[in-house]
Length: 323
Image (cartoon, rainbow, N blue to C red; front, side):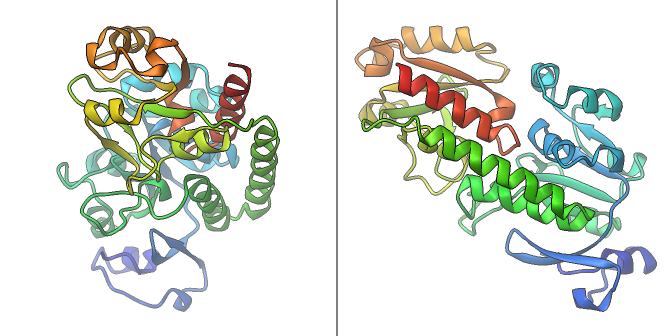
């Protein structure tokens, strides 16, 4: 990928893609993003894609650096319940689909997105395409590709959260705020782990899908949410983030609890409808989670990498400890 650049030089050379060593530009900050050393000037017009990514900016107090955000219609409920609702109201909502034309129209100098969180070869919206336009990009670490096809994830999910907070803190000059957040989140997670009992229930994360379920491997936020709360992700052996599996595998792994993603996916649009489907799907009838009706719901913005992850761990830990 054409990632090791000083983006100020790109602007000066009219998008020619010239490469220089990051240390050559005194006004840039270099961080490691998805395994690449990338040099950034301090951005002033940022466009973000997806609720969790946008909330990372707001948690760092960077709403004033944003030209706008893009979120899908299914995430409107998350905005309404967001701890940063006031920031969402102040910063422009640019639409539901991120495109090169949209970020150019916003005069963006920086885009924060991720693979399957806006970046996609099929739409042509990629870091390389934006680099050619002189626009810097930062990729969500949870969604970094790991070198095996389009599989995503290069580190444990909470480490990805802390990495992004620390990197963004450096890029935007708010290192102290980033470290304050990380310390607070680590304590919240540690306190939640005090609730964990000896028995670790097997947990199935159900995002969506009727013919085939969409779930979490070991590199997406639900894996650490489940694990730190005292459960075991039944698909924690999959070296991927969000991925599709088969119902046969769900039955074979025999979960004790189902964690439902409250996200409008176009098929089963509410947690109640998802639960009703699971309870009516005959192959699952003997699965303990279904027989015992052990379901727990978390919002989409708490289950993708976001500053809501620690609170989600605490909430799920209390559920598991009390059920």
